[in-house]
Image (cartoon, rainbow, N blue to C red; front, side, top):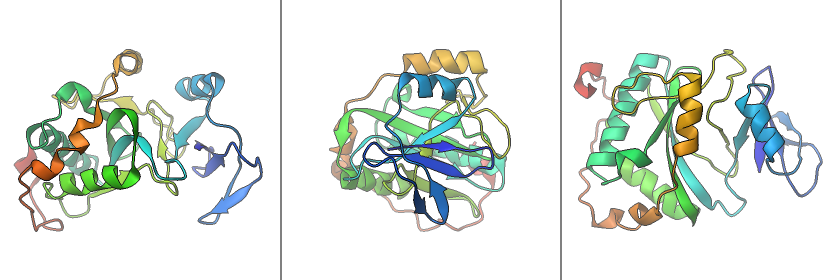
Length: 220
């Protein structure tokens, strides 16, 4: 399934089965077939903003760590820590980790798989990664997409702020330009989800400080 975000920030969902409106969390949702080329173009040119849900069985071809807080600085330092953990603790190549500024005060850190994965396997991976993360108070990292909760596609217009979502250099965390972001998008390669199979072999040191107030300098 896919969604489109209207100018007021509400989401409208599109389902290939019924074509009838439904309601999720009090929001009217319109249903239509899955994304096609015209819809993707409309999204990339900023006319509409689309997002996707997980499949009905919660199988997924990508995982997004949705980092959000009231402070862009705190979100940035948490996203940097997340990239570090994925690379150093979970042996994921930097080229396979993709960071997007969401268009507000958050970041989406994503991995794209070359074949669908069971939802519980991907969620287990998410939980394992989160056990390595020490969150600054007020910062949240959520698992996306779910069958009930979508995540916006990259390079969207945030309909509440009017800001454009762009890719971020994962080393410097400088924002790429829109043109650079389009080029980056075309070069993304899907990864073999082997990383989901080896997490039980990795030593996990749980950090019991998820609500501790830490200096952002700690994560530079």
